[in-house]
Image 1 (cartoon, rainbow, N blue to C red):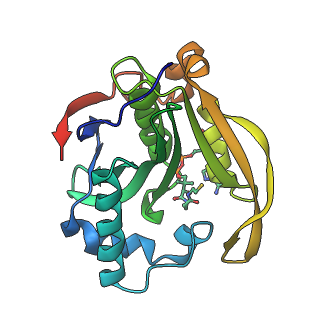
Image 2 (cartoon, rainbow, N blue to C red):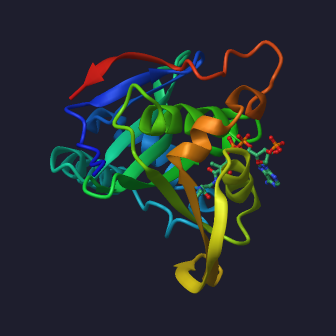
Image 3 (spheres, rainbow, N blue to C red):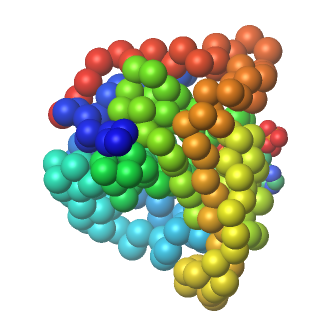
Length: 213
Ligand SMILES: CC(C)(COP(=O)(O)OP(=O)(O)OC[C@H]1O[C@@H](n2cnc3c(N)ncnc32)[C@H](O)[C@@H]1OP(=O)(O)O)[C@@H](O)C(=O)NCCC(=O)NCCS
């Protein structure tokens, strides 16, 4: 039996120019700034209407962390200190050592490999030797969401089937593909080459810089 106990705290993961760290209510304004963007929320639900909705959502994030259902990171841009993205491991199933992953980034930061590095760091923590050692991470991505699908493929996820008209998105009900990644697959992967961008420290060693409640 390989249960994966929920961690005591959300770990802080340093990926160089960005940091994955726990959410705080003080992030609401920054979170709203990019989650109000219809392009960002196209496959996630509706755009946030105002900053108070952003605060409500962050309250729910924090509650799910407290109750051991999710590890939720804000992606902080180090130069500004702003939360410009999110990466969450939710539906934490300790008994089956399994969780789902989701991510989003403010549009100004798209297309620079940031999400690839963020997701890589989250997976290395979740599936690697120094974290909870989950057995499986899964993700559901809209078939039409090319960027998200590519992130998962780069990280070695396998498409396991299509869930027809699974979620109502901005343009109506969309088909979603279910993806899965097993710990053994992650361990066998040459993760350095996944992120090969000259001059970037992106390999297996996203440093765990501490822990936030
Ligand atoms: C999905 C998302 C997080 C990707 O963020 P990103 O930081 O731009 O991703 P990366 O720069 O790491 O790119 C990852 C891969 O996708 C490709 N890609 C990115 N945007 C793309 C696009 N619009 N069309 C095609 N490919 C794209 C990149 O080229 C890269 O592949 P490569 O390394 O083979 O070149 C971002 O588009 C986003 O926030 N979208 C809205 C929220 C969302 O849909 N989240 C996923 C829900 S399942």
